Every structure is written in structure tokens, then in C-alpha cells.
Length: 280
Image (cartoon, rainbow, N blue to C red; front, side, top):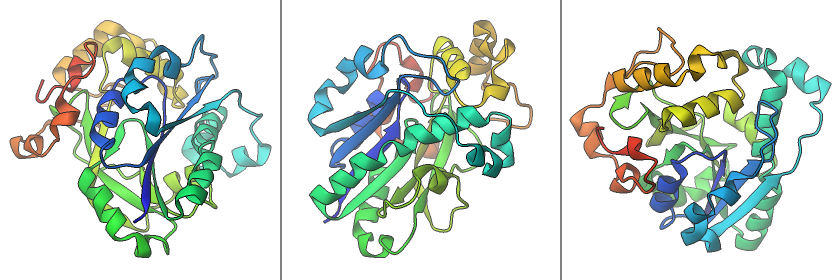
């Protein structure tokens, strides 16, 4: 049977504690990629994999850590060929993509070790379901013939109380490791596994949200208002968009949808992370 490797980029997100607890019983390895610079270009004083080592300690025998020590200069051609939404922040998106693709050498080594391998390529807050992972294992022979299978995920903000009324399809599963993972992430999905997990966006305290906004690739939203802790707390409490977008309404998650969320994801494993409690 194919080995399953959970691959994700990391920048100190608290939801990773729940991710590891939920997925550890059903994946063979984790590959966690952190960079010494944020996507905005700021150098960190210390890696989060070091400051949060207690989060990883129960699973360390299953984890391969990949550290990006520095980012090379962005190739000029990459900027010219990037999608329109990337061009205004091209260097930040280059760093984001480079960090993800830094997992490829480790993945190739694991594939040589295991033979048959399925890589789940995600951001840290995109969590595949156990059922989706089993379905991918069962369909390994078919999966080998596809460039990627994108994972259709329910889209939640702040905690599972709030739902964005659209599905999220950026995380994906892949067996062939001859293509940029970032290119596959942003490609138009050709094959989609439905109801395959949860996008747990901004499952954070206001302080953590402000840090994310100041460090991620979406430089266009890094404004004083979007980093204002009181305003972020108000948006969190009221269930309005974390970036103040009026065209992105949130809805209360239905009781039926809440009942389907695994307890490992709703249980707070870190005292700071009280936001992930079901319905709170």
C-alpha cells in the first residue's frame, strides 16, 4: 500500500497542533517546511519549529523538517510569467512558492525509500480528512496517472463556528514529483476529491492574525486597519471578514456540519488556541 506523506509550509500557526494530532494515526510521515525569512522578507529571530518544539515532540519520529536558510533572487522570467494577482507582490509570492517547492528533494528521498508514495501538499491550515486519505490510498493506481488531485475543503474562519459559503480547492494530492508543487497548487483543478477536509483560516488570536498579515505574501492587505488588534477582535467576534472585505460574508456553520468535524480538530491542545473550540 502507498505511503502517505503530509507536506505543509509552516510559520508558527497554532492549528498545527490539531493537525498533527488528527493526522498522525493515518499518515506515514510529515514534511514540514519553514523559512528563516517571512514571505514579506523579514528575517525571523528564531524558527518557530524551535520555539514550538513541544508541539512537535510527540510526533518527532515521523517528521522531516526542511529549513529554507535563504531565498535566491527571484528569476526575472518568473515575474513576467506570473498570474496577474501575483504581479503586484511578485517577490513575496516567489518566496511563498520557493518555500513549498523546497520539500521536493525530501519527498523524492521518501519516494525512493517507500516506493509507492502519495504526497498531500497543503498550507498548514488546510487539513485533509482521514476518509479522504483512505480514498486516495485505495485509488493509488488511478492517482499515478494524474498530475494532481485537488482536495475540496469546507472553508471556515476563526473557528468552526463561521463558514465562508464557498469551497476551497488549493491543497492537493500527488504521486509524481517531477513538477513544481506551487505550479500544481495554482493550476486549474482537473481532478477533484469532494468533501475532502477543512480549510481552517485565521484560527488565531488577534495578535497572531496581525503577525500573519504582516508576514504573508498578500502584501496588498498589510494595512494599519488590518493589523489593528481591537478591530481584528471585533471582526472575530462578529464573524466579519478578517481583512474587511465586504464581498466575503461569513455564515454560522450548520449543526449538521459541526457534527461532522472530528474532535481532534475542535479540541484545544494549546492554552493560547481557544479559538478552535467547536461553536465558540
